[in-house]
Image (tube, rainbow, N blue to C red):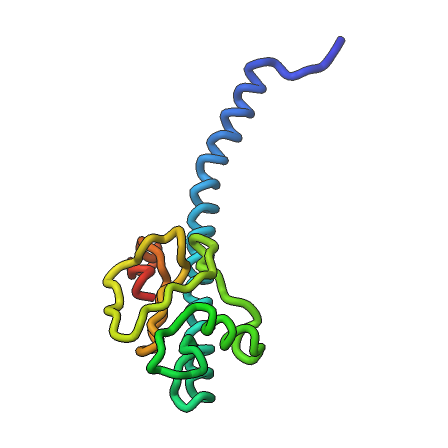
Length: 152
């Protein structure tokens, strides 16, 4: 006599596993979102501290200006060279955890900071050297506080 599970027993086990998965999966998704939000806040903190340190060590001139000349237009190459290649401020540019892009859109002198995120598949951050303002380039709101990601 062979011992085996009946079809009814197998269906019951599969149904129970489906119910458990339906309960557990949303919990994991929520934790993933919270992890991205925490990483975004931490990456912004790191970027802001590096920008401040650079400015303090360069007579108030924030990074992004070629040869630290504020009369010139800021550019991304100068920013990367100043922040990463010198090795004193960042070992690498932090990524936006929502789109995994580390590129920074630099706003020119006098350019008005946008009121909301821009095209989110090209830049992870938006930075205005003249005001030392850097923001996360992502739409949506924090799952805990309801604060806009752009306003972190």
